[in-house]
Figure (cartoon, rainbow, N blue to C red):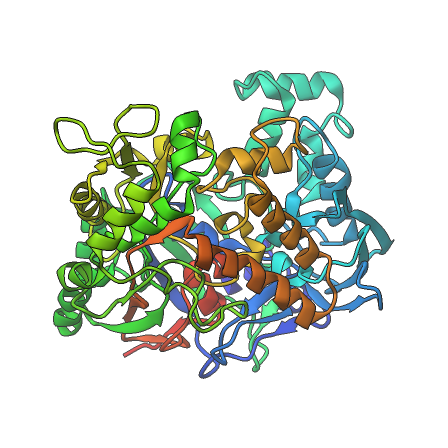
Length: 596
């Protein structure tokens, strides 16, 4: 930034930083300023290549010690009331947006009053800030202090804040020009028309999008300068970034974050092999581990074994629209039979070099709610047991092709729908193998691959009997749809989730066993005591362990992460999960390139 300071385009760095900036202890050593940090992405929907690197919230996750901790970020510290109903966050004083404007409590209050409480922008108040059916109340204490008040105790707010709290960090001074509560009506109408939108809230959402709007000020390490659909997305150093290293140098070290377009995952892999990727596990894939390691020397990188990896599974939709089909899929014995029918050891040999762990998805040992034995119900290969259970469940009649008939006389047909993705191997190969096992016990099972956005539309619209996909292994309590029909999605009971979030005005009313899980989760959220909260989480997972609402294959826990050899401050091993924002858990703002 020295040249811009000399030219009078920027004030000196000491005037751009807060009086007490957030000091980041580098993972290994303080660094030097570097050129470009390179990544790849496969298209507009693959925003993980850069947007995850731009997220900043009041708190953030830290994985340096192997565990997952919540640490200060834009909030230097916080206070929690004795009853757990109030959280008071103290903001870093003197931090500025990328255009130099002050970041204060007014920005957070703007999000709350102008966005969260505006029905046109936010038809449903954010579920992560609702407890006991009541939305949080946010109030400004002073310019650098905000308080969240909840109707009941809220034990997991800090985890949520680290996961999705970046959404409340918005620049009031910029966005108010697109909001009818602040802007002149005629001027706003003209801007809406000029941008070719029909309604003001469409324009507002477009302008508020940090991953697409290059004009929007940010608190992130880099500010977007070239946005999709460009083949090369570029974000440049934020001159007002509010963090420094232990030597007082303003972060980030890298001048630019650059994401280059690859037509598909295979091309992304080839770019990594060619040495064009600095830090990435996305699109590398466990099946490519050998290829990646074989080319380490020529590509100038090292493959780090991060932790995570896919767990391909089939969601047995309990709320499917076909009433006769729903009755069959709601039968515990049928779901158990489908699990008994899968030869997981054979799949492990076929797809994962016998390095995966057969099982059903009930979180994993890294999740605090996990207990020994979870995920092991009915995982042995026993087609005789599967046939016995299916017969006993009323599917003992078969048609001329040998396929089982439902009690209503229709063939018991299931379609395992996935979208093109890598789960160690192509997802369609995995689910085609599962379909073959189920055919062997008389179920007319077929695997189908569809486009990703269509998959999401169908899965969320309750239009699939068996969405087939990955699952969360850890921190599911802040992303509960994997195991509880609540919030914006639940692939194994999508219409029950709709019933829950609509307070019974839409969707389908769940049976008592599933209602109980919804109640347990609400109790978990409102329980201030850690031990009691853990008990509710374990109850939910135990119900999955018993019922098998989601049938798993094998869990591979190795994520090959490509790291260029000249990068410094990259963890040798970290947990790669969406809830930790993928490679952002590496704290990219403190990574730098050692000049050879």
